Image (cartoon, rainbow, N blue to C red; front, top):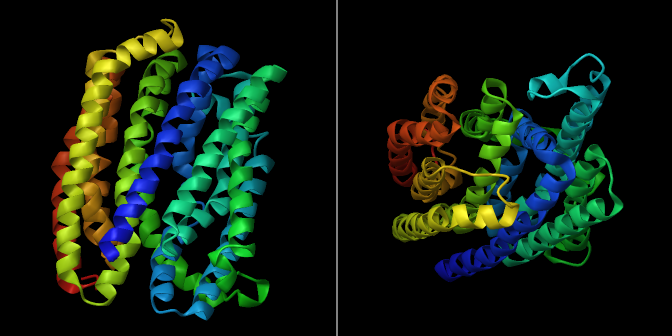
Amino acid sequence: MRSATVFRGVLAALVSRGIYVLAPLVTIPLALQQLGVNGYGAWSAALALTAFTSFADLGLGVGLMTRLAGALADSDRDRARVLVASTYGMAAAIVALLIAALWSTAPWIDWAQIIGGSGPGDQAIVLITLTVFLLNVVAGLIVRIQYAAQQVALSNAWQSAASLMGIGGVLAAVALDVSSPIFVLMAGASQTFVTLVNAWWFFTFGAGREFRPSIRSFRGSESKALIRLGGRFLIISVLISLSMATDPLIIGNAVGLEAVAEYAVPAKIFAMLTTVVSAISIPLWTANVEALRVGDAAWVRRITQRMTVLSGGSVLVLAAVAVLLAPWVIATWLGGQIDPSVILLCGLGTVATVQAIAAPLFMVQNAAEVLLPQTIGYALLLLMVPIKWFVVVGFGSEWIPWITVAGYCLFVWPTAVVGYRRAVRHGGTEV
């Protein structure tokens, strides 16, 4: 039964990600047309800056998903309600403070220069991009909640709707011929709106009615406990972002924004492969919580082996297809504006593949709250960041993903195996 639930969730997520994959095929050419190469580069670099705001919820979202899955497995609706209310309350307060700080300090911080751009237009793009991202920190909690409630198919249906609304926002922005900052706002906020509607529907008409949050359910002590757990996930999230999501910033400052666009467009395409990794692995997280809770380590080992083969094999095949087709697709799609090298394409595909192989191992560790080994692995991966800078300057940006691959295999894979064995052996006790 548990395995069937996982595979249904994976199938639903893959269908949803298929729609997500199609969205950039529509939006990237329109964005390049509306913003220009430099404007699109500024937007890509601004999106990379969100790596530095990934701490915004202090890891509350993933902490909530882990603890809420346990509460719902125990049919403890009162605890579930307290967990949800406490998370929303704390996350909303944190995000409000960060947005206020962002805009109040804007006159003294040259965000445009930070991304390698200049002028008020680039400054506004950064401010709007970061604001929308922060708002989505709170709005996006519903995805974690629905996964914890084993509502994976429903969650992915709403995420598909958000992707489609994002396309609609871009089309509307182009039709209205808005300025670059307004274009960025319409592209991002339209998706956030759908996510908010999802939360309203889930807690009003869906399964969330049984644990709908209220102000009375907020508990400061529960928020602190979630922050303690979330803080450990947060450290991992920040380390991943700093080591793997800042490549456009490195390129922009080392070479220039035009080079960012040359890298960001193919990177955006291959980032679709990471959505396949998420689709396959994330449903395992909450299922592993339940299995470890009842001591079913044999199921955890069995499903992890199967999903490692499925995840790694699927992404490897898709990456090979993408490498073969990407040059023709990009040339046809963008009319020759971007001409990526085969070295870059192969590197991006390999990055996705090495991540896919390790992902199911990490889902067991996350469910068991055994986080120290992967924290060490991603901390060591930071050593590759200065190497990336020198490689970009000396050899070109097409080599940057290969530095990530080397670091991942050298540091992250070994710690993934160690952490997985420890999680299964101790059933959720960090040692």
